Length: 237
Image 1 (cartoon, rainbow, N blue to C red):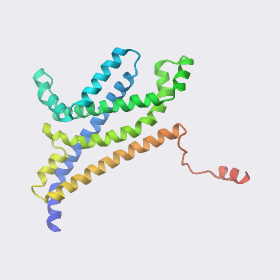
Image 2: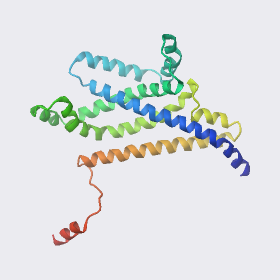
Image 3: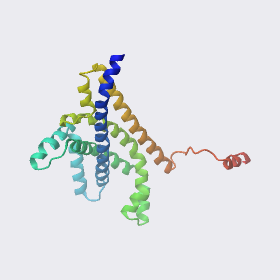
C-alpha cells in the first residue's frame, strides 16, 4: 500500500498535466465543432443547390476519412504549404472539423424536425431569416440537438486520446509514461477513471441544458416548489 501511495504521489503531477491537456483539447475541439456543425447544418438547408452540394462534399469528406489521417495532414503536410500550427492548435482544429461534420447532421436533422407549420407561420408573418431562426425555429431545434451533441461530445473526449500521434502529452501519453514507475493496471485504471469523470461532468452539463431547453418550450414541467398561495388555492379548490 505504501509503495502504491509513493508511486501515485510521484505520478500525480504528471497525470494532472496530461489531464489539463486533454481538457484543453476536448473543450477547444467542442467549441470549434459546435460552430462548424451549426454553419454546415444550417447551410445544408440552403435554398441554392450549389451550397447544399458543397456542404455535402465537405461533410462526407470529414466523416469518411480517418481522424488520425486528418491530424497527420494538418500537422505534417500543411507546414510544407506554409501553414504551421502548434500541436495543441492542430489537435483542436482536427477534432473540431471531424466531429463538427458529424454534428452538422444533428443540426440539419433537428431543423428539419421542427414542424412544417412553424416554418409556414414565420413566412406568413413576413419574418426575416434571422428573426425566424432566433425566435421560432432555433429554440425548438435546439432542444432536439442536445441529446445528439451530448453523444458527440463524449466521442470527442475519447477521440482526443489520438493527439499523442502529433506529440501532444495528453492524458493517454502521460499514462504510458508513468506506467514505467507504477503497476500497468493501476496506471491505466487511473486513466480510465479520469476519462470517465471528464465525460460524466460534460454529459451532466449537456443534460442540464437539454432539460432547461425543454422546460422553456413547455415540454417538461418546472420543479419549482409550490408557494403557500398556490397550496391555499389548491385547498380551496
